[in-house]
Length: 134
Image 1: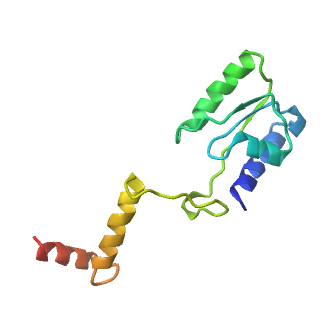
Image 2 (image 1 turned 180 degrees about the horizontal axis):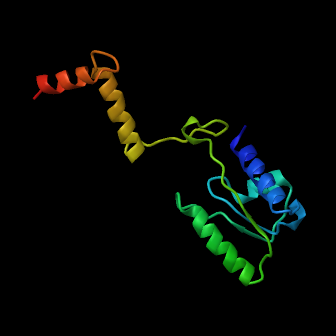
């Protein structure tokens, strides 16, 4: 299942659970994927969208933004989705990870550790290597 399909599955389940129809949705918010991609996939044309992406708290901001949009009369019913396949990246285009990023530095250190390790998957090898070079 692709990441967009995961969004659609979550969206359709939430809409059904709330007793709504797709046609009731006039506001939409999500992060990572663009709101336009998900709306197009679902076949909806909302009057208000939010694609704020600030990390793990994006969806808390979406709730606040949705409440403000409803209060301002920009929309009446907002759908907020989240879908992620995690580290497996199933159905997702791999992102380039820069070597100077935190993730890139971790991966580089991990590769170096594995290339120096004499006994595979053994804490003993790392301990002996560290003692030898101390």
